[in-house]
Length: 127
Image (cartoon, rainbow, N blue to C red):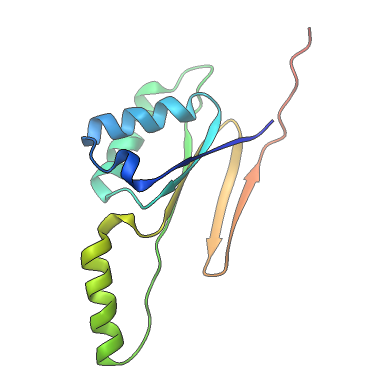
């Protein structure tokens, strides 16, 4: 069974970088795919990768990560100014972050119109 866990931005925005990454890794290590509102900062992404590499073992093979952020390509001074203020007010709460265990997620592909999450076939344990 595939489990998706949605995390609203408000649930982790107040946490320190260390606490935020630990919370995310704890969920992923339970073989759940995280759909998080908002995005990680570049420093948080780097720290997530570092902590993931330190945690790799026979059971935990790592993570797949994808951050999707809306790109405003509108022309015109008023539209660009409006988008500047939206980014200033919303900060990192715009977009979505997908984090999944490498044992389940084969690849995450994105383009402007869709996200494709390719999963590996899970083997059932024999009893």
